[in-house]
Image (cartoon, rainbow, N blue to C red; front, side):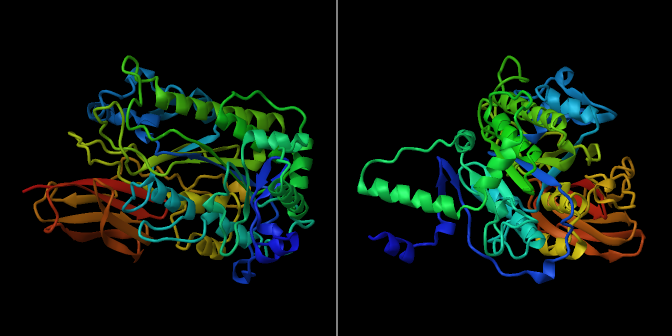
Length: 527
């Protein structure tokens, strides 16, 4: 095929994978104006760095329930972290973290970490692929979306992208993934707003001008020609080189994949790249077997993963501080799901529902949001950690409080109105507001039920401060069974009946949500 025919009958060069000195970039086609979404704040230089913990992280061994330790230990005696080894958190008595996470503990002590307990979504999917898709797109469990939550956000900020880009206002990529493909999280309504750096070595090959050899064949010549066209069409390689070139010295990083990925991100941020979203990943969290060592449960595969993650976050924040760029950054960890409460016979844990998320940065409101999850007296293999916070509430709160997205645009990005959580200090968007303490009602039962245990029906009593109030009923698998209440109310005390006649005997969870406040009530149906 002639070169002109090749490009005539295939995709334009702008949408081909661009091989630039061994550095693979994927850029995608144009998108329409989304005028209705305009108005989000674009006059800050804030950055979000997402750390994907692929495989399904065992959050119960990462953030350990000290106040419910006996239930935790009884459910997983073969892998439970010894109580004396748990790392304490300043001014927190209910929970501590895995002993390998000393760098995260240090950041927490410095007031730069927020831990969000029991993050999930109704009726969780336990497939790695589908659950990952849900977290990246922000969809419901029974909904398939063709756009990512980050891509929808970027379209509100840059509604005509990629037409007219790069430009003086935004000369840089909107989002960057360190990895072989562009994350679906960055997929916008028509175009993907991200680009991928295939690996850490590819990044340094780009900076040093290295190029992979091509065979001296007809196919090799065509490949060389395609690379040349791709270089010409790639709009962002020069800005990446320019930003990286401004940073000649960095802090010390461990020789692990996650640390080296974050080292690149720190260099680009400190070099002045205006990229809004970054994503890096650390794999290996699918710990069905040999999660811990039998002689010392604080060591083993999961401990190594959490240690590498913690060290990388600590190194990243220290480097940014030394480069005087830490105030630009908020970081966030997430995994496609958690693990079961009860361990299995292989010294591991099986696919579960909710798990904690770690948010970190200079402007984070430090603390632990939510309560430690309830531990059944006798846990079985189907018991899951009940959801306290919807993962999309975390996304929405960061968009609102860090990127200063206005309410109308926020609802378009997230597709629904999600609970706002006090994650980022209000000073970040120069708002003269005061977020109430999300745990201010700790010890106060805002939701109860009577009788409990019950045989067929029970009366749920609740107290709302007014406005939107939600009650959801889940089983131990995390499946949403009923929504007895979902409406705006005047402040006061109310009751609603829950009819469980058709449900089997067992444990159920009633989740109450009112504004930023949530509580989970354990209910027991018996004969």
